[in-house]
Amino acid sequence: MKKSIILALIYVPLVVFLVNCKENRKEKDKTPFVWEGANIYFLLVDRFNNADATNDINFNRNKETAVLRGFKGGDLKGVTQKINEGYFTNLGVNAIWMTPIVEQIHGSTNEGTGVTYGYHGYWTKDWTAIDPNFGTKEDLHELVEAAHKKGIRILLDAVINHTGPVTEKDPVWSEDWVRTEPKCEYTNYESTVTCTLVENLPDIKTDSNENVELPQVLVDKWKKEGRYQQEIAELDAFFERTGYPRSPRFYIIKWLTDYITEFGIDGYRCDTVKHTEAYVWEEFKTECDYAFAKFKKENPNKVLDDNNFYLVGEVYNYGISNGKYFDYGDKKQNYFDNKFNSQINFEFKWNAKQMPIQEMFAKYDSILHSNLKGFGVLNYLSSHDDHDPFDAKREKPFETANKLLLAPGTSQIYYGDELARVLLVEGASGDANLRSFMNWEAQESNSEILKHWQKLGQFRNNHPAVGAGKHQMLSSNPFVFSRSFSKKDYHDKVVVGLNLPKGKKIINVSSVFQNGENLHEAYSNQDLKVKNGKVSVNSEFSIVLLETK
Image (cartoon, rainbow, N blue to C red; front, side, top):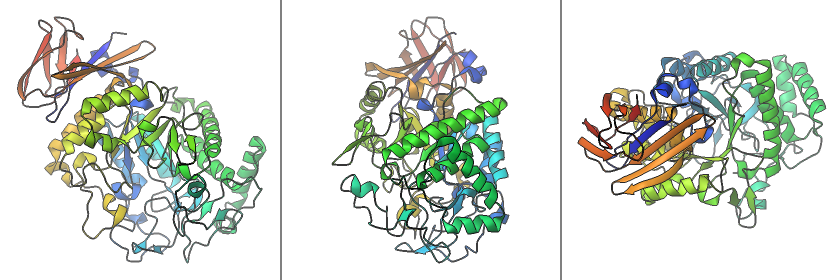
């Protein structure tokens, strides 16, 4: 295949030259999807888009809550609506990660932050059911189908290590299933894993290999719903096939992998990874791989490509500098080999704040192509539980896009990054500041910001070299670097530089383009030609996206 070339120039103000082949632009299905360079959009289902007001209140969850601590109406239909409208496609998103959608506790807590419901999805009551506030199984089927039609992968969020809090409506599970003390101290391995994350968050005994009966609360619930016999039959078949003991973690692994075989999801983001024994994630990966292979075999017309099931972990405070290991103080644990494809990179925002961009890009390239070769990291600059985001007041939305979407590794857009959704809310406390409803009303007022994110996002989507390619600096002044990526007969190159002015820009491209080569500048939509080893671009923008025609 003809080599594609991308040249990008970045700084603040940033100039980016991007080049790829016309063939790839017009036939995007030939551009391989690579998780290591994906552009993932992360959203809280309840806070993104409300397309069905009839499901806004369930289980009498009608107490007045603290600011942004209750359900606000977002649902699966709302996500599907935006998929069908092309919102994600326009943003260059090729994977969507949603907060957990399983049935949440019915009651509320009132500890520290005021009355709070499980709007965020991390307070599980029943892993086998979708919370009606989020929608139905039919809604999830429609969402996955709609996403796959547009080449977008779907990640659900897996919680294995704890149930939801105990409330007047949600009794604690039996002691052979959970521990309710001690509270984690986080000083070593033991005080991070064999304990409750916080008070009143029962910890699943994932270390147990003892056979246990189902919690009575689930038995009673399933009988009332008329599906007890079906659930028991499925569990019997699972344990007969695997030979696993009927211990707590294997029940939950079975329930979570059912979402793969039934709905064809493409991956899981796994919550609180370091609070669960490492071998649990090996077991989880084994069953996820089995379920994904089964789905593909039974649904050959729904298979997107030959990628394996994707698992990305949340090892809180893990950073790329740690390579494959997380340090508990008294023990270092590898959470990559035989466990996860990638880990969330909590270090990225600090690197983006403190390091020159070339130093940061070179560092990431070095680690990703050595210690982490074959794996990846998920970079972010704002998230749902990071109390110190890169730009809480949204004073630097263009810089945020530039650094996140052009960095080596996988990018994670947090819902509203592209619309400068402010992460400080009057009256809110703690992580509630990060979880306001999506600011759809800003699409017009922040249209230039959105366009910038869209153009860089589409570029990243079209060119795996951006996130997964090999980085090399070509010039320090002006700063110019290349990215190159190959997979089988597909080849993609990216060159990035900085500090070119608005207006007329001339750059030496002789090391990547041939004289006379015809290019297209996608950011300002103009055709160009290489002359004497140089490209001349005259535009009002500080960003230039070049593609070979």
